[in-house]
Image 1 (cartoon, rainbow, N blue to C red):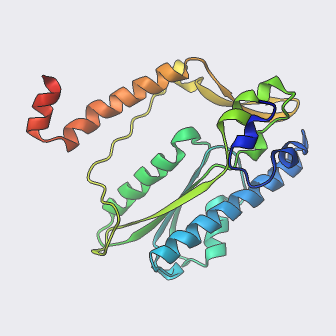
Image 2: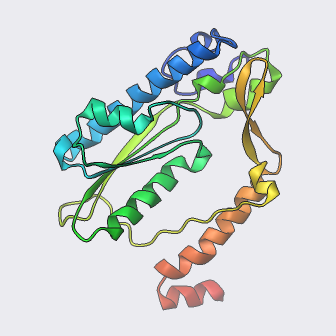
Amino acid sequence: LKHPARTRKLVRPYEDIVAHGADGAKRQAEFERVSLMLLEDAARGVMKRCKLEPEDIDIIVCSYMAGQTLPSLTSHIWGTLGLRDDVYTVIMGDMGCRAAVASLDVATRLLRSENRPKRALVLSTEPVRNLFRSACNSGGVVGNTLFGEGSAAVVRSTYREPARYTIKAQQRVHRTDPDSLDAIKTVWQDGGPMIQLSKDIPSVAGKAIETNLKRLVPMILSPWDKLKFLV
């Protein structure tokens, strides 16, 4: 497959993305532009679907896979959407593949810590154009093949109002041993940053999933289901 990234969802053609080469300024500008475009589209879409106005949002949690902006993406989105000036904002950057789940977890915990009903706008995006490389660069194979671009948004609420889903239990663990830290990381070469995955990542991910399930299953299964599971 000459250009694996062609099978992925991208904001612009793959050739246009890698044309910037090692020009860090152009790559950064594109990262910011696309990140904000994706986030705004997702945010406005979910607010419209929920029939909410900017003043109805109390908390905004935004996460992304990899990249940097200053001011933060949440600051940009706060201004673009015209949210209240007392909105509580959280930015979670360089979260890798767990970005969306981690932001949902943080938003839920924040809502549960409040003493009155509130709404949280949860956003997650993956604009990885700053990590793509040309097809002739062997170091770019992983990033070009596995990753695409997109964004998602949900509104979490503790108001007594119609909801599509209810979160009854949640569980998230961290693994900080040396093997886990080296499983996925951003490395810098002459052509700029790119994603590097270790061959041990299936094992590392499997251990985290196993730990999560051992803690999560008892929270959601009935005593009878637990007994059947043990048998």
